[in-house]
Amino acid sequence: MEFEPKDQEIVDLVAKLKNTNGGYPSELLAARRQTYLNQMAGMGLSAGIGTVLKNAAKNGNGTSFAPPSAGTLLEVVLVVAIVAEAGTLAYFNRDKVVEFVRGVSTESNVQEVTSPPVSTFSFPELEISGSPLSFVSTGTASEVPIGTPIPGTTEDLTVNNNEEATPMANSTPIPNLENGNNNNNGNNGNHYGQTPKPERTKENNNHRPPNDEHGNGNNDH
Amino acid sequence: MRDGVALLKAAKNLDEEALTAIFDQFAPAIYKYTLRLCHDQIVADNIVGDVFAQLLEQFAAGKGPRTNLRSYLYQTAYHLVVDRSRDSQHNAPLEIAVGTYEKGQFSPTQSQIEERVMMEALISAMNTDLTEDQRHVIILRFLEDFSLKETAEIIGKEVNNIKVIQNRGIAKLRKALGLHLDDEDKS
Image (cartoon, each protein chain N blue to C red):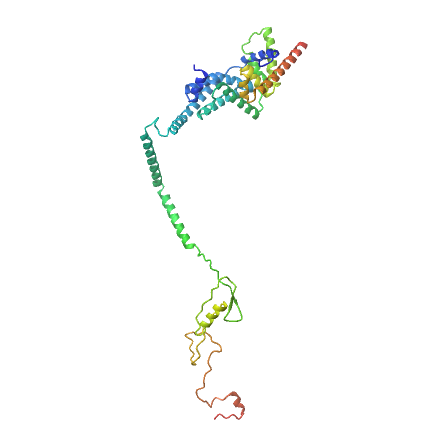
């Protein structure tokens, strides 16, 4: 017994309520049944497809419901269908495809033109020192600015550079004055203090020096 | 008519005839059980629809009951009723149940009147004095004739727990009916 005997009366009384409450109203029951049948019909289609796929998955070799060649044939048909669909889509959207390809190619050209040159070289900072032929390099590079070579002095500067590791800047070439010839090698720059004194070629009595005007007794005649 | 196991097996294979037979066999009982709990015909009808829709979904997914289809349907209905009662504390007036009990009694005798008074008191006690769990257990055990084990499965509790709930519910009903009888005797 799952309850005490003294509770039997209460249990009998409760059991009499079984017949209480009316049954399912016929109109409600009919509508609910129709709804249920519709759900069942809708589910049947998807369930049928699901069952077929399930069986196909279970029997991978296809021996139970189709011959082996059917599987290969199905694969071929699927591939052809996919290719045909892709081709159709590409044909109908060919304008967009061409535009896209052009856009991609144009974009790459612009990148080539506008890309700035990348240089890792760092130029040395120059500081002007008292000596015109020397400078102090504070950068990391040890390059020596190369100017126009000075005749006669280039070797000395080069040796000095190699031995003392002091970079020397080559100056403007000095004109060759050994023969009294103003040979500047075509360099027409300023050469202060280097211009040779003009030589007096003939005596001119008409041109007296300024101190002769005072009659200091200097007779050049 | 197929037996329960064959019917369940056919239904799991989505046999339309079996699924229809299940609805015809259990829908009225589920409706009655639900109406006892929620006291609303429309709500009870909707819950019946939900119960069988879930059953179809479970079968389609390859799930669903394995052995006891009846317990499974009542369990689904129970959870739906509990969910709805949580959403809206809906209690239909007692007259619905009493009125349906009075159906078909045109010329009641004295004993029938006494029994009617007793039943009104019982329904009132079940609706007001019992807790939610006690009401579910009493209905499943003595109105739907489920065993302790089946009731435990439907509600989701241990069998011993169901026993305790049942005994406490019966004690409350006895007390309520006894008080009622005492008042009747006094008057």
